[in-house]
Image (tube, rainbow, N blue to C red):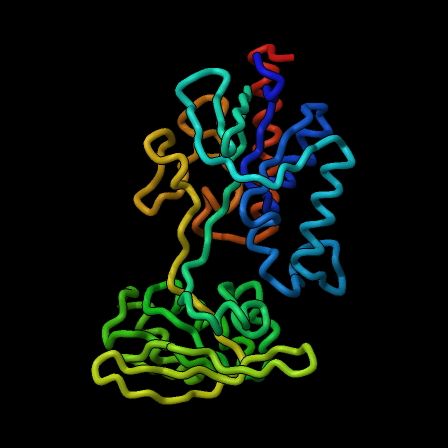
Length: 316
């Protein structure tokens, strides 16, 4: 066996991967964490996190992930700021490649997460975390008595619009068509909500805001009508993008069972995938909750599943 053989390799480094690293390193399994192209996961593009237990006054997303990483490293976890580019789960030990390096593992925890689908415009990147968000349940609280926009036409977008009316004074749904993809019951409920307005046949072409003295904030958006190309500006304090998520599972296609949307399937009540010895934690297998705390919970579950598996197989 090569020197690059490990009992546990964790692919991905959000709350799920790093929590799994804490638990497996405390069990003396010396895990290797491949942190990938976004070390710390989606929380690194979040400014303030106020709903993670233990931080009474909130904490910045990148700082939270750094604390969890250091906690894992204190017990012997090793972080590699590299991406896994190829996997072969048909062999045992499992084979993983990172560019030109080959690694083998007895067990693998996959916590590659899911990425919010975004508008992919320059101003969106500029104001992400400063008025632009892809998670209403994470950030809605910051927009008390303010005007917000929600972009999207599916159930998720309309659910988020309704949720945001708990905080915002006004919510405007921006949708590129006249018809919604959302279920009729959700459309009806949204239309009945007095705080919700609609801008249909509208696409955001630019997010407008200010960047003064190092402080960035959103002031509105420019909408284009895709039918006639006309433009209009709408004022807003916050913009929530709700056009869906894409699980980061491209690497595992054809090897692990997934649902139609590409989320990894696990056996109910566990983190076990269809291949013995491979486990999935966090948003990569969760299209319902998608919260840092639920991801951390499944990271713990995956680590405990790994420990039991190694014990059962007698792998020392």
